[in-house]
Image 1 (cartoon, one colour):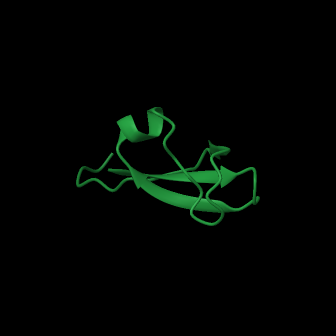
Image 2: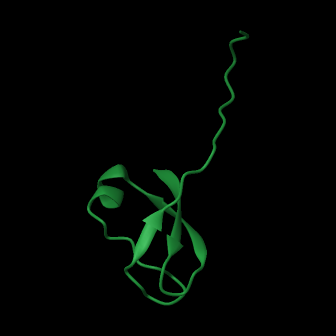
Image 3: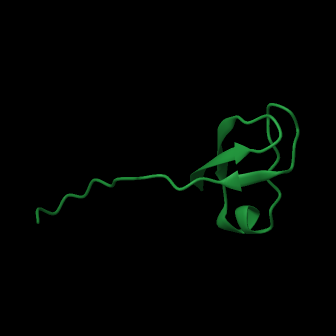
Length: 54
């Protein structure tokens, strides 16, 4: 599962959800603060750590 950051247009709050890709694509995300369904995914940065040196 991956973590996604969403923004609720109804209550104007950000929240993070751990979802499978299929759950995110079917638009089943609901705001945990107000129960609103008008949410949009935000673009976030990420980093990874590997054992190989570049």
